[in-house]
Figure 1: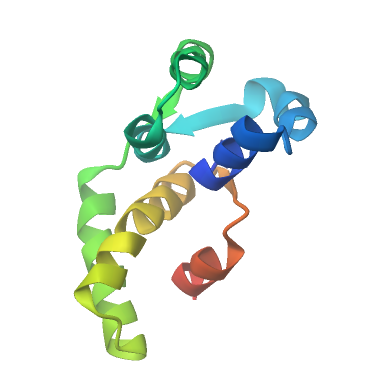
Figure 2: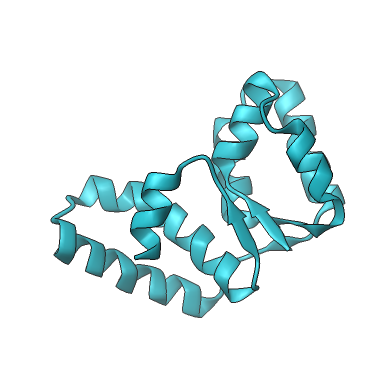
Length: 123
């Protein structure tokens, strides 16, 4: 299974950067409900809305569990303690932590173009 981070979909919608790679994965794609929420929040054109509806119609949606939510708080607490992040940075990272934990819970591979933050979360 593969979960694409919103960074992949945004780059693809803007410049078609990952269309071939996304298509090549086919039936292995799973949506993260967190990614979908991020994408809906930023959708400004009807084509983007059609694409998001298509994603929901064609691929299963995985949602963070209660344990994912609790663990996300614990991960953010460790990141704050280790790196001294302020509240705004922690809020910015929260959805990424939830996406990563959801992928891990389902044994899915997370594909992102935002490597720096996800490597930080992974550690």
